[in-house]
Image (cartoon, rainbow, N blue to C red; front, top):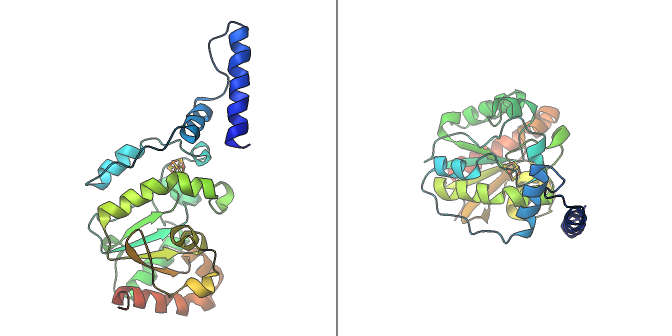
Length: 229
Ligand code: SF4
């Protein structure tokens, strides 16, 4: 349902309940919170000096409908001064249960890919475009990406990485505002949020498509080397 339609329904609901002498509005607290988020002008993002402040600002966020199906918010993990930041699309089932990004088979492959180019997970920051699990591991929808974007932007501002590597098509598309195929985006330096960005394949895709691992390895080697001037 569109926001204007939901607003109209809410107005009808209020008028009807007022006529009946009732004071409370039907609908869940989350429905109303999301509706208010949708109709209130967006407040400017505060300035943060630490990731703990960003996490506190996020709270038990209900800005989008993904809050309804989540177990845990997956904020991100890694050092605040990481030089390289990886951004995936969103948490899967295991991440949702543990509240950590890239655990499970895809996470293990990511660790192996990092090791292949001389990196350890403890050296990089790993986050997702959306912090709550999309149902059935579907791609995040545009309004969910937009709702969660201020948190990602705040994370990037605090970490100020030298480079970002997006993992998979939805993350590359969301960050670069592009709809180009991954075959064209991967391995090509771009720029977003003031930071050089290099897209590569998602480890879950590489588990299904092992023949693409060599390309991902080449991308990570380029990532470690840094953007070409
Ligand atoms: Fe909030 Fe992001 Fe979770 Fe949506 S995905 S509820 S915006 S934290």
